[in-house]
Amino acid sequence: MKTQQQLQLWCTGRTKLYRHYKKKRKRKNDYDADANSSNKADESITATFCVLRKEQVEHQAAVQHIARALKCNQQDIGLAGIKDMQAITYQFCTLRSINIQRAERANHALTGKRIELSRFEEVYDFLLNRGNLIGNRFEVVLRNLKRIERMTSKTENGATVWKERTIPCVASHLDAMVKRVREFGFVNFYGEQRVGDAGHSSRVGVRSYDVGRAMLRQNFAQAIDLIMTGRSYGIYHPGDDEVKAREIWKTSGGNAKATLDAFPKSSSTMVRERDLMKGLVRYGDPLEAIQCVPRNVRMFWIHSYQSYVWNIVATERIKLWGLHAKIGDLYEVSSFEQDGTKSDNINVVEEPDAVSIYQVVLPLPGYNMKYPSNEIGALYNKILENDGVNLNEKCNIHEATAKGSYRKLIQKASNLKWEKVCECTSEGEDPVIDAVQLSFELESGCYATMLLRELMLTTMAREGKISAP
Image (cartoon, rainbow, N blue to C red):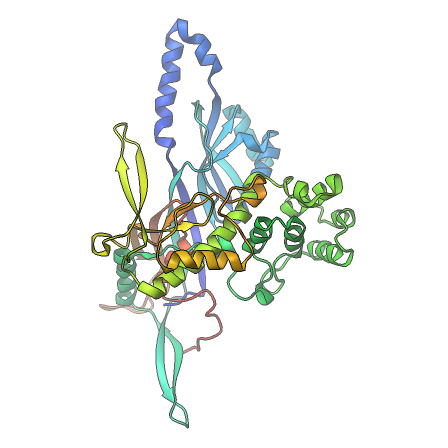
C-alpha cells in the first residue's frame, strides 16, 4: 500500500498530572474555607491551564511566540512533550503566574502565527513539565491510496528481475493491513523527526544526530559548523536570506558577526542558529555559544544521536533473531507499589520461552546502563567506538553527556481503526478505497510515522522506484 500524500490532522497529548489537578484545586478550595489556612493558599502556585493548538509550527518557535505574546519567560510555559511540526496538534499547557484574562489576550498577538490558546481554567500547584506525557492520540488521513504489486520477469540471460507497480487499494487489503499491525505491532524505531532525514548525507545534508555526535565528542566548534551548514537544499527549500546567511558563514571562515548581520529579519526563522551566533559574538567560545541555546534543544541533539544508535541496533536485532526473545536479551517487568505507583525492573533473559517479544527492551545508550549480554551488547560497543563516543561515564559537561533509558523493541497501538473519508471509486463487496482516516493511540515517545511505515509495508527511501499501472 502506498500513499502520495499523508496529512496528520491532529494529535493530542495525555499527561500523568492532568487527572490529578482537580484534586489540587479542591485542596486549594479547602484552604480557602478554613480561615486558619489562608496563608497557605496565598503561598500556592497559581497558573492557567489551557489547550495549545498549532499548525505546522516548530515547537521552539511556538514557545517563543507565546512567551512574547504573554511577555513572560519561556520557563513559565509548561508543556509535557514536543509535538510534530508537520501537523495540526493539540496539547495541554500550563502558564505559571498568568491569569486567564492575560492568557486570553495573548491570542490577539498570536493571530496569523497559526497558534491558539483555548479552554482556559485556573489551577493551583499544578505545572506541566517534560516527562509528564503518557501518550498521544492521532488522527491521520491517507490519500491517493495504492497497493504495490510485485512482478517477476526474465532477462535474456535467464536472470529473474523483480519489478513493482501500483494498483488500486481495495477495502479487504486495507482491513488486513490494519488487522496485522493491530495484532502484531511494529518495530519501535525513532522517526525522522528525531534522527533526521533518511538517505546518505551527500543527499540530505546534516542530520540532528550528526550534531549530537559532535557534541558527545566534545567537538563543539564542529557541532556549530554542522548546525550552520544545515540540511540539503534539495529536500529543504529555505528563503533567500537564510541561504545568504549560511553562505556567509561558510565563506567567511565562521565569522559570527558577519553571519548574524545577514540573518533574516524575522526572529522566528533560524531560531537556534541565531542563538548560536549571538553566543559566539558575546563569548567567543563554542561551548558557551551552544549553552545559549535552550536546554531542551541542546538535549534534543544528544538524544538524536542516542536514537540513531538505537535504530541501528534494533535493525540488527530483528535481522538476527526476529520476533523471539533470546538468551542475553533485556526485558522489562512491571510491578506496582502499595501506593499504586508503577516501577519497571530490567532483567536479563535466561529462559527465552518465558519472555514475550513485547517485554524485550533495548537500551538507549548512556551512562549507568545495563546492556544485553549477547551479540547485541557487543554491537553497542562497536558502534560507539567507531564513532569516537564514550558514554560509559558521566561527563561533567552537560552538553557532552548522555543519560540512558530503555525502550521496547516492539510496540502496539491502542484503539487502531480506519474509516473512509470520501466516496469509494467503486462499490460492491470489496470497494476501491482512495482515501482513509486512521485513528490510534501511542505511548509517549512512539512515532506515528513508524506505525504508518509498517502499515504500508514501505521504506522511507522508496520514492521513484515504483511504476504507475
